[in-house]
Picture 1: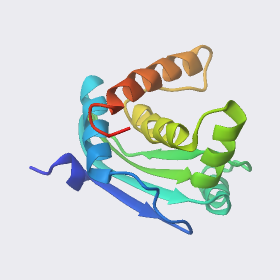
Picture 2: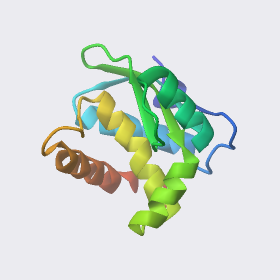
Picture 3: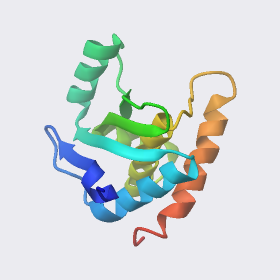
Length: 148
């Protein structure tokens, strides 16, 4: 059986990988999935810049705007799988906009995509608040896996 570190791939396009302990983050992500009664499958994080995220947004979703994350969900039943594109440029600008530090915003976005894979949405009425609550709960677990 694969460990959580073997199930999550951390890659980048046009940017360097963020300075995170990927093994610890993988354990955290696995724990968050388990807390939502999900089984961790193959997940690939693709960190990129704004130019790449808008290319992906236009090509696959026909959206013409920048975003911090695009989640491609390949989950089946309780097994979560997906590709998650994350723009480090947008994370930096969003962190500044909301008065958070870059690392806090990066962690929030990393887990945001996993929560989407767990079935939590944020586009409909009242869903944004539900997503934020789940993000906050997941971020509260982070310290058990990652040195702050």
